[in-house]
Image 1 (cartoon, rainbow, N blue to C red):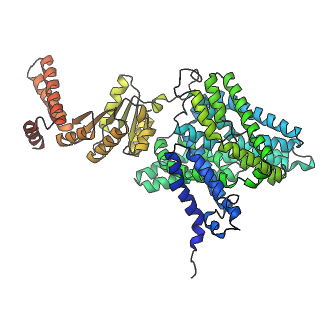
Image 2: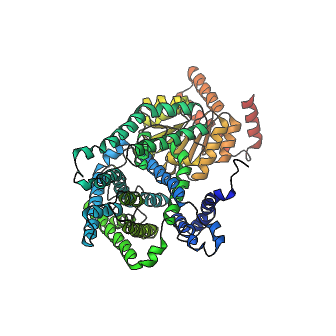
Image 3: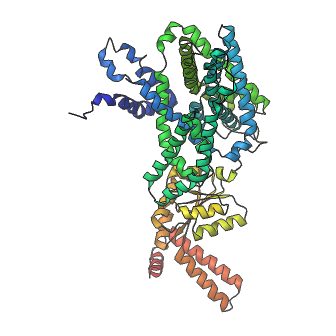
Length: 596
């Protein structure tokens, strides 16, 4: 029948989902990095694993990835989404403040490792262009693997974690110039390798960056604001995917990497009120596509090359790990890290990276690096990359779990401290939320607000407040807003169901958190106490107390007596609501009075 699709066409998808749904959870259960699960599954399911035996045992073909090229193309989006999320964690201002580490330590690491590897390659007979390409490929570490590990262990804000991130960031920024330079070298056989005409190859890349920045500055916030007003999670998700993939495609069309375009888009979004909601929306796609990326890396490991030249390939991998770790350790000490922090950073950055595939593929395509040598270097880089989780575990152990006040502290890497560790998180920024925020300002208490109404968010942003658009009933969003480090949560929304959902979610996340919630009446206040609120403030109770205070003042009762009686009555209400079983009759009479 026309249009009929064979079930076999979905075999690769099923194998990937089986890996994600069965193998990786087992690795997590055994406390082994899931990255190793995807990498190992890729080796086993690839053409050099079970695929090599399928000719002898045809039934193994059903357990083998049949189209590695298609998997690899889709897997590139894993790195794209990862760089986008990294951009969201930053902003232009943060990047400016990190310039010492990014353009200092990062630039030195890339330069020193590239030169050292290139010199070794030239000693073994490679021409300068080929040696430089190999050095550029092996001098870059794995952003995907290392950032995943730092995030899992919550070490991204430690001194070693910040230094590691700074180096990775410069490496990512260096990919585009490296690729353009390789293209120039590839056309330079007639002696015009660095003529002004060929240097114009940089012009499309510059235009692409300017287009992305211009679009982000002028249209990104209005577009997301329009989508947010529709109050549709599906439309917001579609808009987020459009931003990531659109920026990546514009970057790719102008000669840059898709990952760099996505990173710039993330930087632009980091300055908007939609930052945390976008992070929560994109996170599942990033995780799944990164898993696919690691699977494709494992598929590309040619086990036959490893079997043919094991000493040479393993020697290259060992030399690469030793060189990168040594250079990063030395630079870390030079830039002020402690010995333990420098060791941690060095081991995290010791392995090869995903951009080695991009750079060496380009170099082999341009005829700069012989294909046989390029494949062998790729296998060595893959092996070193597979060792990163083990090296990282050793580095985290040597670096220590606790972070002292040393390392990067002299330079404020994170200028928006309130966003990373707010003292109070205010959910709902209507009339009540604004008053709460004003009182917190008066007492110089750092706070962050969350609101679902894009118009309220926009107005507060124009007033300079730290407020973000998003659904605070989602644990991921609360986490992004800093709930894990906050001292208190104030819920000021006037939607009873929404308030209860947020209180329940926050209490489940933080049993020790102080939660103060607005209640519509006594019945809802009692419900909020059951859900774990530290204090619930019924609107009807507070209105009656304020009316009582006003009339007592007007008829001449002394202010001291009024304040004392108001506080006493408020405490009675709170106790009655919080322990209705001990004051059953009184509670029922109180509720009937309030409801009438």
